[in-house]
Every structure is written in C-alpha cells, then in structure tokens.
Image 1 (cartoon, rainbow, N blue to C red):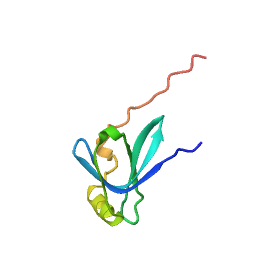
Image 2: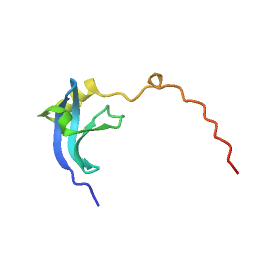
Image 3: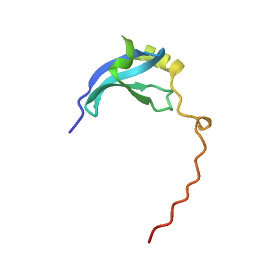
Length: 99
C-alpha cells in the first residue's frame, strides 16, 4: 500500500512560533492524519533535511521559485541536535537473571 502525496512545490513556509523555512513541500499521510513534508535544500554536498508539520502549525505558505527557495533555505536551514545539547548517557548495568 502506497501513501498518496500531493506535490505543493517550492515554497516559503511560515510556522506559528515565528519560524520560517524554505524548501519543497508535499503532503503525506502519517498514522491516518495529513501532514506537510518540507525537504529543506542544503549545499550541493549536503542531503536535504526533511521535517513534517501538521497543517494547524502553518501560518502561511508562499509559493516561490526553486532558486529563491534554495537561497532562503541556505539562510534558515535547521541544524541537527548538537552533542552539547544532550545529557551524558547514564551507566547501564543489567540485572542478574533470576535463573
């Protein structure tokens, strides 16, 4: 079974919470609900970053050209989680088996 998706195209996506992203947007169904999928273009040697948003999180969608979206994406590309943002792992010692 495939997931039907609709191609919205290259856009500037503005989200509630004052976040602006640029990239190629499609719709996807996840767990029975419709989401916007944005693929945020990176530099030529970087893969796109994919994020999903519920329609209620969207403030505005502005259709634009691929060139403008790529230029805007370079300025507002999300960054992955950095090591300093994570707590160090807790030591793990498995319990002895009861047998």
